[in-house]
Amino acid sequence: MAMSRAYHHGNLREALVAGGVDLARTGGPAAVVLRAVSRQAGVSHNAAYRHFANREDLLAAVAGRCMEQLGRLMISRSGAVDLADQGQADEVQADEVQADEVRAAWARLSAIGEAYVDFAIAEPGWFRTAFCGAVAPPRKEAVGGGPGADPFAILSSHLDDLVRCGAVPAGRRPGAEYAAWSAVHGLSDLLVEGPLRGLPDAEVRVALSAVLSAVARGL
Amino acid sequence: MAMSRAYHHGNLREALVAGGVDLARTGGPAAVVLRAVSRQAGVSHNAAYRHFANREDLLAAVAGRCMEQLGRLMISRSGAVDLADQGQADEVQADEVQADEVRAAWARLSAIGEAYVDFAIAEPGWFRTAFCGAVAPPRKEAVGGGPGADPFAILSSHLDDLVRCGAVPAGRRPGAEYAAWSAVHGLSDLLVEGPLRGLPDAEVRVALSAVLSAVARGL
DNA sequence: CCGCAAAGTGGACATTGTCAACACCGGAGG
DNA sequence: CCTCCGGTGTTGACAATGTCCACTTTGCGG
Image 1 (cartoon, rainbow over the protein chains, first blue to last red):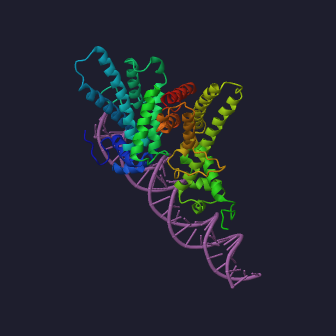
Image 2: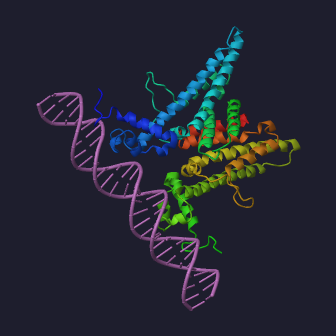
Image 3: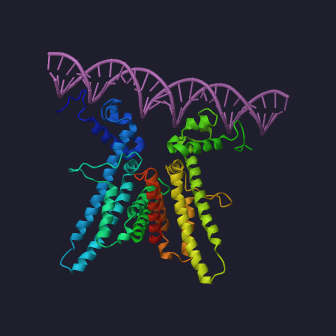
């Protein structure tokens, strides 16, 4: 199994993508350079062409990883809300349970929105790479243990929850993902590479809460 | 008078920026290539270095032009709303005048939002260039007749109008530009270079109206 | 045991950003 | 009028990159 390191590198494709993710973290999509990732993998340039059609193809793979990273953070933050809530769940009326569920659904939506923006700010290189326009098709995730972390799907299911528990009228559901996603993504983009770059931290929080509450009202 | 007057070329700086805008239109920021714009201006490479510190500097100038272009479309669409409205303005009660003004203010906000997205769709190269992160400082526009077409300033003044005529409570004003701008910019970015690329036209209109009405409700 | 296709290598080429040294030109000062 | 001078533009060079090509090596399947 363990291939001799001389010629056949264990599985290169993986190493190349990992190296690309590394470079993208600090330099964004422009830093995902064929020769650089090859060098970093201890392999000479042109080796990558046995695994990717061209640079764009590699970038797409790297972008996919970044997107998954974002999805993972969103899921994790959403889960954290559930955990925090269940602490104070005790014996209460049935309708109070329902009210709590509504509140929790709203909190989860806010949490994934905040996660989105936080990710963009904390990892601008990854964020810019994820949305550099190199992502492949919708990416049908492997059914198994893979973290099916497509941000869009996550958002959709959270909106479904809001409708299901009556927090949002069903008539408002169509197009809701566009409204919510656009708002959060727009703020992220403006903060990371748009005219809002370098906005003071306090102002960032003001903007974030303004966007999130506007979305909540707007749904 | 060592003005930027004609020396050898005419005034090159202008020609270079214009050529850059040309290339950016079809190829986005990546197409703004020093040697290409120099070639297109009938001048050999390195001539540009007498007018710009480096490629990034030129790109910033080109990006500024693209941003102005966007601002101009927004202003023009906002003006078109006024003209369309004044046609049906006749003798009415005072409070109806007020109601009309409120309606017009909302219509103008919608118009600039729609203009933003339309611009992104119609001129993706320019849009991507405008927001590629190369724009110079906050750009203090000349107060006079110059096309003070900073999209952010335009949005701000429209929101001010909404507050002034009572359509939006003053308490909601802080942060409102973040909410509105983020929503519209996010949709544009997702449509132009994000996962929403290639969305069928009908669906685009659904998304746009969902975003615009959500913003209106959210303010 | 052998050959073959997959995996990796080395070299080459065009393109690009950038630097340095040089050439041109038109006006300022004599 | 002539002469210098700095702003403008040119030529040449260099390193880095994406990509094509021919070649080599490896290990698996017959």
